[in-house]
Image 1: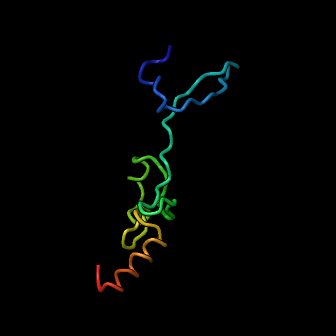
Image 2: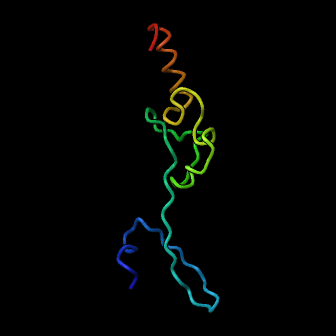
Image 3: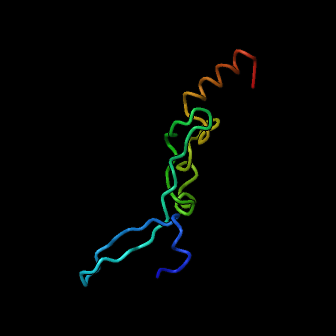
Length: 91
């Protein structure tokens, strides 16, 4: 029986063939979902998909786009937000 911590479905089961010919089960963490725009829900471009420990190792400029609301809004929603702000006279 596998240890209790690995019985949760948050661990992905990967079947591997061992050198002796038997099939064994390896447990891996599931990959995080793709970051999405908080306004429309579309996947964000320029934002890497990875575990927090992988993202921490990246340079700051590689973590998210360097623009207002980068990593939160997609470019289309940002353009709409900025055009409304210009019409109103500021954010």
